[in-house]
Image (cartoon, rainbow, N blue to C red; front, side, top):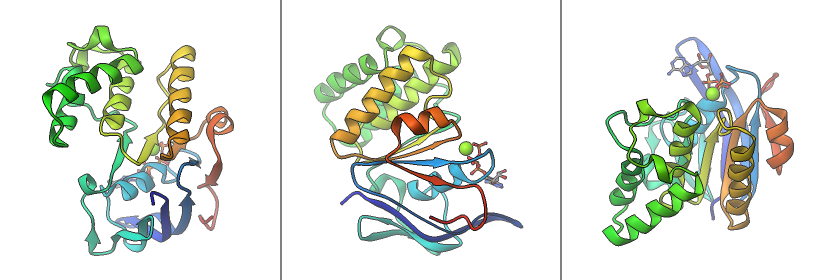
Length: 217
Ligand SMILES: Nc1ncnc2c1ncn2[C@@H]1O[C@H](COP(=O)(O)OP(=O)(O)OP(=O)(O)O)[C@@H](O)[C@H]1O
Ligand SMILES: [Mg+2]
């Protein structure tokens, strides 16, 4: 089971209450859009699901299993979750192809499999001819595509996409959107944070609006 559920999640940064008893459910094989204005907590929620932040109250479930609650958090690598970070979080010293290869190697894949999977992913995001480049030599859209390819590398069951289209132009938006739809068709569960209504209309099976009070759904 790869549904994702948050139950009564609270997250504070000092005195700032970012999430207050917030609940949601992303069904297996569906796209849940987290929609809301800047600062409402979309990235924080994705980081809680990834295991990169700890909740102050409540719990995160993957399927029926609690993976995060106060004082007990399953490490990110044990979650079968891929994340495209809003700021991409690329490794400055690493060439494009190495970003993918590094993740594949950590997952235990053989060299031959890694090479063919890396080729497939670079083709998918149209970066075959930039495979030798380092992040500082890439455009914003190219960096974003590296982040997308890296998140897809190990074929995770759950994908967390934080504003994944913000630097992509029309044709690439379409290609990446189609790929996200095809991942959904293969049963992936997708959480997509955005403040773009066009993205929501195009992709969402369900929308959680994170603005307003109480922040619940
Ligand atoms: N590590 C942190 N320490 C302190 N405050 C934080 C931290 N991370 C986020 N915040 C604050 O929490 C609030 C929610 O941030 P978050 O990044 O989750 O919003 P967001 O909905 O993703 O916004 P945007 O649409 O601009 O990306 C903001 O006020 C932010 O400044
Ligand atoms: Mg954000």
